[in-house]
Length: 140
Image 1: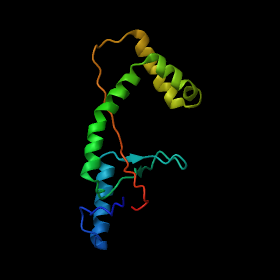
Image 2: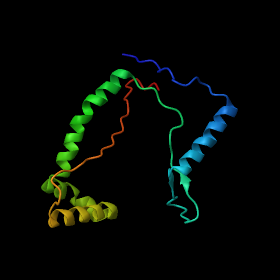
Image 3: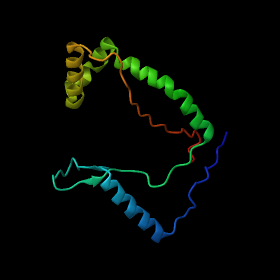
Image 4: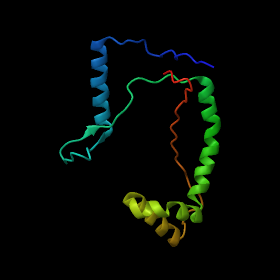
């Protein structure tokens, strides 16, 4: 089954002058709203870069979007159960904890909180899932 290119929701091509203006405004917005990061290879405390972002929305078929919406509660429950399974977390993270300082630090915090006892009976999970659409025929 061949699926054609999806129709853009923005008339393309965008006039060059307008595109440059929109890019400049988007970068300014990003900087003013904290979408910056430091360069790891050429670190300096006096400079930040704008984190990569998409300027124009990508069209996504409604049927595929509906599938993602239907799947998300299942993924949320899975992540919740994993986050509350001490034995599973300890076993699956054991190698990463030896080589990844950031993960080890988060794990240490989790162990301290667990050992002190949970003060709250409820927990809130804020999950982010990014979905990519597979196109078997390779067309974009």
